[in-house]
Amino acid sequence: MMSETIRSFIAFDMDSELVLKKITDVQALLTKTGADLKLVEPRNIHIT
Image (tube, rainbow, N blue to C red):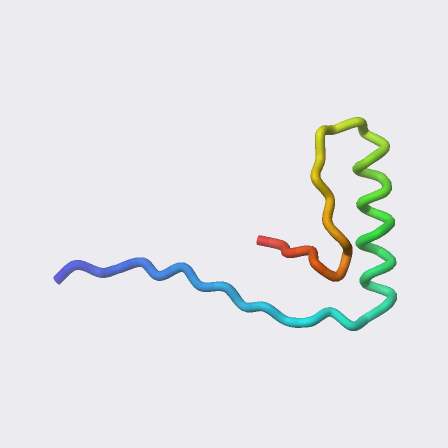
C-alpha cells in the first residue's frame, strides 16, 4: 500500500495591531536592502 502526502494549510485573521506593526517594520527593513521584492499589505501577508 502506497502512502499519499497531503499538503495542507491553515489560515487565520490577524487582528493584533502590534503584530501588524511589526510586519510593517520588517517590510520597511527589507525594502531598505534594495532587494527585488513584491510586498503585500500586512493584513494580506502569508507565511509558509
